[in-house]
Structures are given as C-alpha cells and as structure tokens.
Amino acid sequence: MKARILVVDDEESLVRLITHNLQKEGYETIEALDGNRAWELINAEKPDLILLDLMLPGKDGLEICRLMREEKIYIPVIMLTARDEEIDRILGLEMGADDYVTKPFSVRELMARVKAVLRRRRPEPAPSRSETLEVGDLVLNTATYEVFRNGVKIDLTLKEFELLEILVRNRNRVLKRGYLLSALWNYNHTGNTRVLDVHISKLRDKIEPDSSNPRYIRTVRGIGYKFEGGTDG
Image (tube, rainbow, N blue to C red):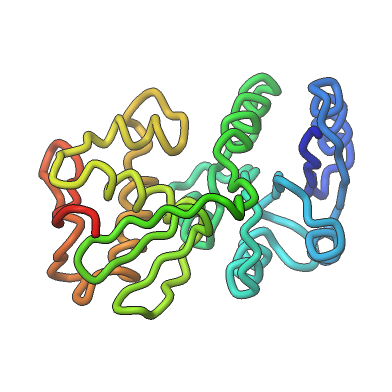
C-alpha cells in the first residue's frame, strides 16, 4: 500500500501543486489549510507522513509538532517554511520535525525528501522479532523502538531512536558527521551539521545521567561522535 500523506499549508495553490505531484508518485493525499483542521486530521486519519507549513492560521506548525510530541504521536514531519533563518529550522527540529524544506523549493527536491523520510519511517513491530541492545544501564528494544535506563522507559522521537541505535551498533567507533547526516537525513554534504548537533544534544539530555558531562555520547572535535560502552548484554 502506498503511503498516505497529509499536506498542510495556507496557500491553496501550493497545496494543489504538492498533492498533484504526490498523487503522480502514487501516494494518497489529504489536505488542510489551517492548523486546527490539520490537528483534527492527524488524530482522525493517522497519516504516514505530514508536510507541515511553519506559519499557519490557528495552530502553527511548531505548536502541532509540540502537541504531537506531548501526545506521543510518532508520525514523520517535513517542515515547509518560507523562513530561512537557522533558528526557525532548529526550533522545528527541536519540536520533533524530521526534516525541513525552505520555500521556494523545487518539486523534485521535495519528492526526494518525501521518499527519503518514508524509507526511514517506523515499521509496525513484528511480534516474532525481538532484539535488544544493552549498554551499561541502557536497553534498546529495536522491535518496539523503546529505550530503558535502569528499567525506566525513556521517551524518544523516532529520529532520536534511530540516531541512538546507529551510535550503539557502532560503539567505540568514531562516526563522522557526514556519515550520520547521510544515514539519518539523506544529506550528502556537511552543511547542515547543526541539525545533527541539536539531535545529539536532545539525546544526551534524555539518556545521560549528566548531559553536561556525557558518559555515553562523546564529541570527537572536528570529526563527529562516538558512543562509548561495553558489549551487548
């Protein structure tokens, strides 16, 4: 089955353009022209992906991302924004967006981002599959996308879980920033390293006993990051 995508923007002509091209690619689409309607559809339709404008009447894009995080709704989000300021992009990512596209954008670029995010979307947990990774007091269940520290569940976004998993699976190895950006965001250059830094910071806040003195995720200056820990339990 093709993915169902919710397109949210207050420019009706842009919504028509995006939905037309998504449908050409075989996706199902639903549309909203304001944030309040978008929030209703997110809860009622449970789309596979949301293309979400930052500036909206009613609830804006950041508020919708915040509500999704609070309600533990793990639907991937690509933020659409006319703003090109880094702070706006970072705010969207901090609120749980998986990627962003700055207006004006090419349809080809947007379709490529859509395909990349959908390839990485969370699959339904398979009942027969159970795999855990244990490092120190951390336990990752890769079948249910759950993380526990000392038996207490830690709430991570899908992107945070994916980042933690790739770090853990490559523990004690230095992973370059470019590699992580390519693996997790499909970026083939290092011009968006701030995106990675934000996610590392948020991940540290959640898994480290003291995020100001990280025990697990170490920065290797000028290169990237390394997860320090023992072997699987």
